[in-house]
Length: 339
Image (cartoon, rainbow, N blue to C red; front, side):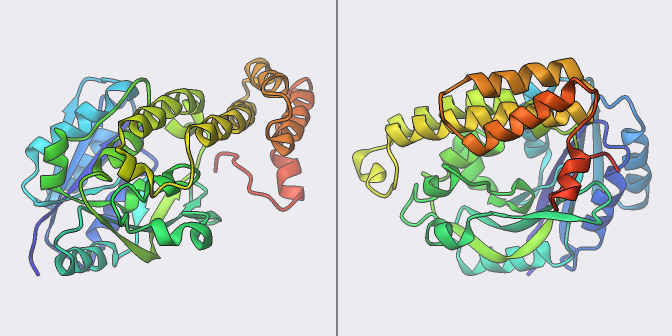
């Protein structure tokens, strides 16, 4: 097989990571690819590092632009989509990496199932130097695996409701994306994966590969940690809008309704404020962290009691200008201190 794969890599201030990201693409056993790196006005050496690789390999193209910001991320993706020459589109953000077999495994799967619009698989979250694995995603494989192929259509909503599909594992048919008008970003959701996936899920089945395809770096400065509350608020609206737009036949495959959506997001609000507080502690933003922990403690009654306990601990430690990472390590949990 020699089908061209277009890799879209949005990046901003990834000087520490963009080199290993590109190296993971160069290490692919499948050689027929192009890598479109969209540098959104980075203020560090991201552009220079990427340019060094592009000068050595014609398959790599760097697109530099003035900063548009996270709420216009879909424009960056769609700029690369318009430049792409492949019929299959892969996503790899500038701080993530792939394992060498990723593209070869997926292109074979897509070739065997031409009706599928998307192929995805597992990924580990890890610390910045990739020396410590945190969690395997999706986390609830045993409970949700029956839904992973999105058959019948919209079945994947049962996964999106309470779990996470790692975007770095996506391989998407360009024709399906074009039917949507490209990548989609709704409300103030600082990512394209959820709104795009929810629309793609109405267009055809998915392929799930039950194997690890890459690593997703977790650090206190990434989008999911600095915009967590926007993700929550806009995510609720995106999910509700898509639920209301479904036909009765499509809703019949779901194991939840509007009541469950509302309940899930009540818990998620507590969790999100607690997580936001934790990462603000790591960044030394103690007063702001204390505000987030206080909001988590004061909202939604008895929702997410374990997370409220964590918020209480974080709130207390914030007064002493310290974080919870030492305690987390002592309890055998992951520490998110920058490495």
